Length: 258
Ligand SMILES: NC(=O)c1ccc[n+]([C@@H]2O[C@H](COP(=O)([O-])OP(=O)(O)OC[C@H]3O[C@@H](n4cnc5c(N)ncnc54)[C@H](O)[C@@H]3O)[C@@H](O)[C@H]2O)c1
Image 1: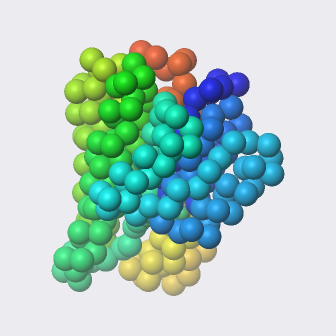
Image 2: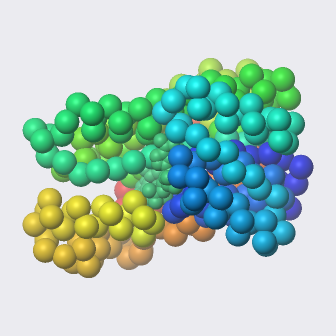
């Protein structure tokens, strides 16, 4: 029980990697706040955790909106009294050629994927400072390290998350708040499935199944990331075992960046 008595907020925990991260942290004893814009998915994730005997509550929030984030952080502290771990996982990804990309699409990627990491941290940090420390884990992406066509807004936002993580790590070290990022390779979450369908069209591959084979070919270990893979990486960075680890970007990518 590496997170016994700790409280963790996981954004975008209604589905995909976030749901897996919440399950791994809760399985290690954390009381988890499942934060998501999708009420149905978030409540379902909480229901499953509670049925398994874990402690979890749902908090509805659009992480790109300051008022929602402030309310969500206050609700978390109201429910559990503290915040030890913040996992900034919520994000969106749509493929589009640079010249077709709209201003609205650019802004929504940057707001949800990058600005929200700062916003949730902004409201969570004062509670961590009061408690004497904490751990923040930002979910970036291999696409923040390696460029891919038709992913300008996503790549830019994730590159930003990796650098923002480093900035936060050095600024918050004095307050004993560690900040790290995890960069997953492709995973078959709802986002990953959507990406395959869009890639099949944009890269003229015909079918999503063919796009999947092309993606897997680029991964030396020949498989994508599961929610459990990402959950275990987050668990390490959130736990006291990583007490000297801050400012890193942990790739969980089957060797794709090697
Ligand atoms: N799936 C992949 O292939 C892949 C690869 C690398 C990195 N990632 C990253 O992993 C993280 C999780 O991705 P995923 O594949 O599980 O995504 P997903 O789309 O499957 O799930 C994302 C969750 O975030 C929620 N969400 C979206 N916008 C939100 C908002 N504005 N406010 C609050 N919640 C919001 C959704 O409702 C959903 O529950 C993201 O940061 C993503 O960029 C994913």
